[in-house]
Length: 85
Image 1 (cartoon, rainbow, N blue to C red):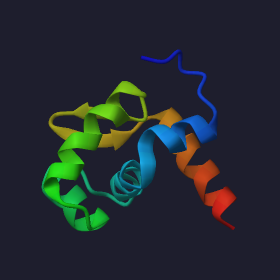
Image 2 (image 1 turned 135 degrees about the vertical axis):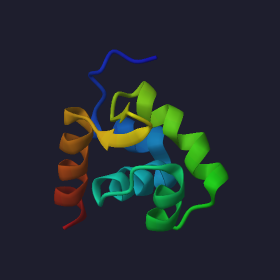
Image 3 (image 1 turned 60 degrees about the horizontal axis):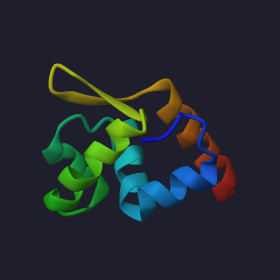
Image 4 (image 1 turned 90 degrees about the horizontal axis):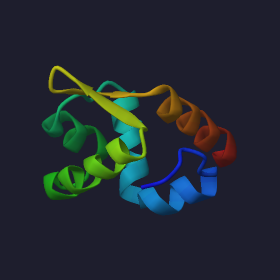
């Protein structure tokens, strides 16, 4: 899809509000669809629709059916936190 060199603005636009909420939910410890849904407050259909985008952008990975942030995902989360101050 992309070359891995997206700017923070590109990623924010690609993820949208829901993708960012899912990213933060996974960072807070949500590992499976149901807990991601609970932590993010989003409907399960939205979670299941956004997870492939996060995977494609290499922001999350799946290990033994659990979701984790990648190094790129952690960097984006930190940048988003800095920009929200």
